[in-house]
Image (cartoon, rainbow, N blue to C red; front, side, top):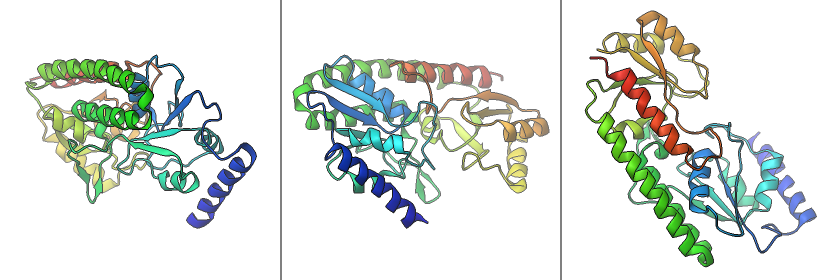
Length: 296
């Protein structure tokens, strides 16, 4: 099945190239940057903001969410066919990347997680790719994208660097404000919806007691539910954090059994095209945690 699907995708790419040319942006005066999904898109539009003849397009819809099981569409392939640069999160988030590189060997790939400063966490044997949920690592991703963009497009290097510096200053201010607000919370135990928050928790010294759904969209087994309920019942403050991108059904079941309150934390994988969207959503996460965990 995989071979068949891979062949069909490659064939569609080949047909597109035959009809439209050899790939790359046909408008040679404009650099087309494509990003894989929402958090990388927000980084890119900040780095490339107001730079003439540089266009940033997000491959997936702003409401797609994490790319764990994402399958490329024909429209995605048309978008990539005219791309000059493709910026990805990396770390296995884009499981379709090998198909893209096989079909477009000339496409410049920028890996946002290509940084020696990012200490990777694991879910079992697999690397957790949600590094942008640490503000520090999000800053490292901005730096990594900027460095590779400057190498790929040296004509705009100074503009990329200045934009990145402006955005990094905003992120740094946000990080300071969140540490001031969260470092001394009286309660640190949280139950999250899926494995999007370990980097966030590590940065702000939160303790993830349990995760409701290891794989988004896969409901916990009765045994997993029972274990989560037992852990929540032992918590001094019973709170569960759902995510706006997924159904809260399992969390509501647990809340009924434990009397836990439900709050929402956003993993920032969907949203609008506002360049400050990451800042705004992180700030909202901060306010939510204060409200949920300030109860002594």
